[in-house]
Amino acid sequence: MLALAATASTVAQVAQPLEPPRVALDKLPVTARIDLPTSADWITFGFGSVWVVNYRPDRVSRIDSATNRVTADIPIGRNGCRGIVAGADRIWVATCGDGVINEIDPKADSIVRKIPAPIKRGREGAFAFAAGSFWIPDNVSDSASNTVARIDARTGALLGRIATGARSDVVIAGFGSVWVASSGENVVVRIDPATNGILARIPVGPSPKFMSAGEGAVWVQNRTDGSVSRIDPATNREAARVVANAPTQAGDISAGGESEVDDGVEVGREDDQERIGADVGAPEQAQVDQRKGGIDEPRRHGRGRIQRDPACYRAFQAWQKCHSSRTPTPVAPGLGWYGAT
Image 1 (tube, helix red, strand yellow):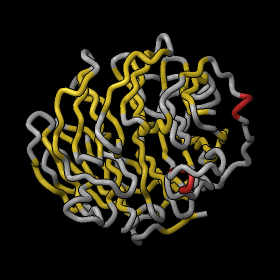
Image 2 (spheres, rainbow, N blue to C red):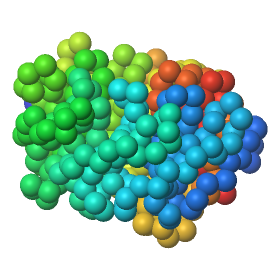
Image 3 (tube, one colour):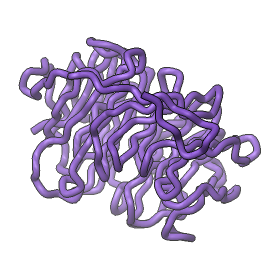
Image 4 (tube, one colour):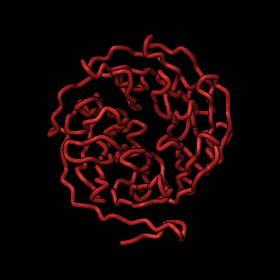
């Protein structure tokens, strides 16, 4: 079946879903559980460690991936938000409660600088680090987040704002570009960091939000119908739309690395009530096999602790996660990580 995208010139192949098995959490081979403060969420990898943002209390926990031990708890400002990234020999985490990007020195396990940023509490989103800059959805100048602010990581100077479209809440970096999902306009905007110019506006599925770059493509989680758009960076077109059956107001998506069962793309789904703390059950996760064009090995994940699972991934070079609500999942050499009770 073929589906016509938002522009007449862009036709994307719609892949039919496979009939997938369900793998219960208690059937996965857990090798370690690492207790963290409650409400663990954003996660990144670097400097031989896993870095996890916690909300109560507000801090970043550092986990040694070799020993599975928490080696540091670093206090941060209120309301960690929009992700945590590694770059330029630092860990960077945004806090919307005080409107800053916190610079963490991994040698000292402490915050060494706070950079003002146009962020405040609001919709979920993500910022990116690329070309020596932060690329941040600006919800201070405009609550609809129609622009992305570029801030120099070294000086903290605002280098410009790029108009990308309504509800541009999520920004990622990949393939030498910056990618912005506009949920209000159902497009992904590609920015050239060398010029701040827009290279393409790519129609995708309804209400796109979280994205991931890997496996030769940019993968977009379309929240309204639960599909996943695959963008070919060589053509700037939606090359396929996978029926992932994961509609959600939150969730996440990740790509790259090698699964024990197959290479793939992980799509996380969580009920919006879970995002605000109501206990309504574990989110579901589906793995998209880009070679088959369908769904492979969905899994249901719990929450509470960080768990380590060799069935999840086998690659450290890709920053990805088996997402679960409030306790996301890092990748470490030979093992995957996810949250569980």
